[in-house]
Length: 202
Image (tube, rainbow, N blue to C red):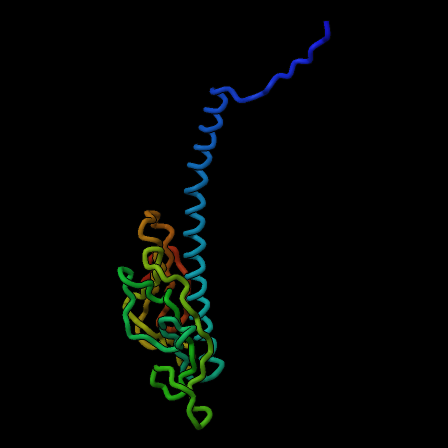
């Protein structure tokens, strides 16, 4: 009688399969919220960093050039660099997250004008920021009080009163700590805060 070699097929039992499925479900339940949280914080960090850096640049350029420099909210600035008079409203737009422009205001009218003669009087475009986000349900940047432009004079001071930019989290995000604020003092200095800031320094 010839020896027979038996081949045994290895497979998961039903119990083992159920355990694997349970582990995958648990890992997914932990990992997906963490990933969503990371996406939100990265987006808010980027929006905050971009605008804060732009405010610092505008102030620095005003001091360097010895003239008024304007940073103003713009819609599709990378297509048409022009200030907008439409107020920021997180219910219908993304506010300053739609973009902005920075320019040296040669004729001090607060509006970016096409270059005109003589040199030294013309406006000079310094920086253009296109839309950071376009869907207002995933975030927005809203100034308090409402302002569509800030003007820095030759000493780096901003015209007007203290203000803040609220960098808002998505509508479906209940984590209040995700919000950020950019505080602009009357002297023109801008800083980032995790808490709502006020003129009193809070």
